[in-house]
Image: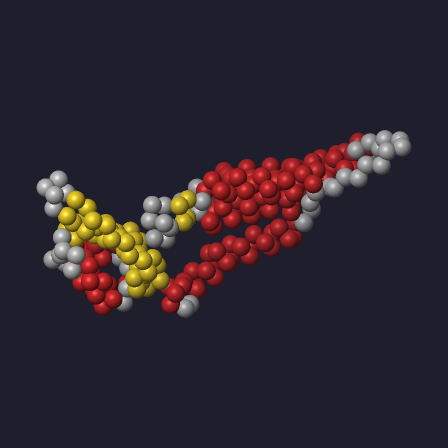
Length: 241
């Protein structure tokens, strides 16, 4: 009888691990297609091992041998709870702060946390809930969010642009601001720095951050247009994601 029970638990454990691995592929493929740090392998490892630790956490409670005269209370999901805390280290590792003050990797960090959640849910036996969650997340990330960025409010349809210019004349700073405003580009931040050259001539380094509607943005075209301006010496431009 014990052998039958042990075999059924083994088969169920294997089934849970397979389901967790398969569900994690949805998140892994989505990140892989976008060339993000967390791809198929990382997502698969996180979800599968989270599922395994959850199974161990639950089964250890039922297999714990009682000690006469001692009352031991164990939380079946105590080990699983530590997964959520520990996974934060992986999430923090993919959040990057760039030199232009933009932050990237938040969605990827959330996906890491979600992959662990899939493993915990499947390990605890919540198959339907795990499957539904994966489907809803993928629909939200791949369908609903892009629709909002294309058809939603103007703020959602704009992208931030980082622009660095070198100007000879400080009066030309107003000219570049007028140029951007005339092309419906809203300046959010400006930083000006004097740069002394080897011949003691002073140029002005202007760092701008502005936003514009996505359809109007093309890195090469925007670079060429700004480069043609008579007062620009050097141009560095980046469209932020």
